[in-house]
Amino acid sequence: MTGRFRDPKHWLGGLAAGAILVRCPRCAGRASVHPDPESADGSGHHVRLRRRLSCLGCAFTDVWDAPRRAGDNARTLPDFSGPNDPYFRLPLWLSVDCRGRVLWAYNAEHLNLLEAYVSARLRERGREMGGQTLVERLPAWIKDGKHRADVLDGIGRLRALLP
Image (tube, rainbow, N blue to C red; front, side):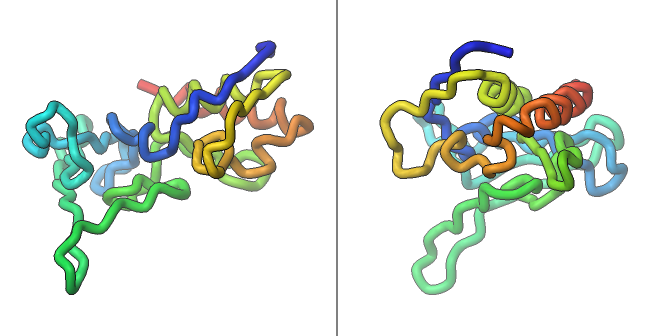
């Protein structure tokens, strides 16, 4: 158990900026959803308008383009919530049952943040960010110290699923 955790003020969408591990819709093996290099905006930043799905197991690939809203032609943003990836809505690879609920993470970075938070004896949030950081939005059952051992066990099971 670590001593102190300081909220790095990540939001869930920021942790999805890289690869997200998902279950392949064809073979149910591990696949990844990652930024399409062709959708860079010229500044080196990958806008969230296009994502690629690729499975090394069966070679399945797909492309997600942000749908346009009716009327104003603006792009619809992905839904960053729940145990599905925000783009294709596929089940996450890093997902296990924990205390009758689903414990999930997008990738190793997300899992490391969860582990650091849960294992800390002292959890410092710092200045309020309007309830928008990942840590501020964690479910109460993950934050509850009496569930620490069970949640850390679940995190260990998720870690075993990492490539």
